[in-house]
Length: 370
Image (cartoon, rainbow, N blue to C red):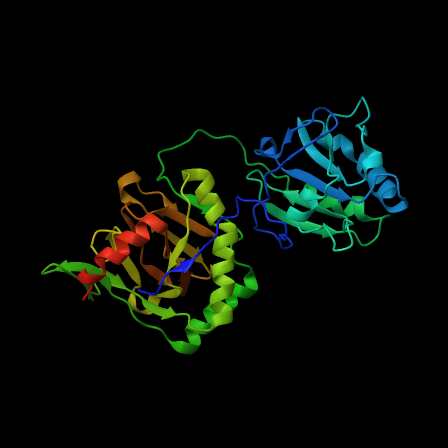
């Protein structure tokens, strides 16, 4: 097991927030708007949102963008609020949507706090105009920097239309309490991790059991068949760590109110159809050496294989298979299995996450590791 590495949750505001990219959670904030002095950003969840930052509504560029957005604003009428325009110009205080237009709000960001959190505040005290499309979970789906004021609104509205796709309503079925998080790794990073495993070959992977009071590794091909590669390249390791920090830790905080601070192992696993790669039903925290683990993460890196699904047999036969770059996150206490890969190879990044309290458990149990 690798040494732990800190993960800092993204819930706290930062004065020097980096630019946001697809897959990142949108910061939650509170700003004055055209209807009250404390608009809660979190209330926008549950719908696709178009969010546009402008330095001003009245300068030439801002006026052109705003006119284009208003011209296409009928698409937002079915929503309480789905188009939000944020201005940093104090002269815009009092700006409000036309009376016949619903689904739109103006936010006043005169101190550029929101612009800083979204990474569009510049060092000269201004704002780099841009539009963001947010999904129903308030994660960044698309980013459109302002390049041409005459075409920006059309580009932003087209992005909204592209991502505003809601599945048909359906009744909930019995399901394991897992998080499915798309767009954690970009395609280029997925490919780099696959190539790294292919170049290094990986090692036959075992599993942890208790024997004579010690936590030891055991190999049994009937129970598990997989080849693992531990990432040692620091740049590649950091790329995975940052994305877990930015895109998974906040989702765990929101869903389970658990403050993730540690990550165990940077490991790419490969299940091969040639030898029936699989992992039989198991839990990930049943030995003293693994008792600190709180959440397991499976980030699929490819989809050109058959079989290889995650199943949680305590909750029925439903099969979980995130798209490439997407994660399945679940409690280490849940029984789960990886079904045999029947064609191709399944590559997956599989860390464990825990917190400072669990780190103390891990430290106390080090003496039980063989």
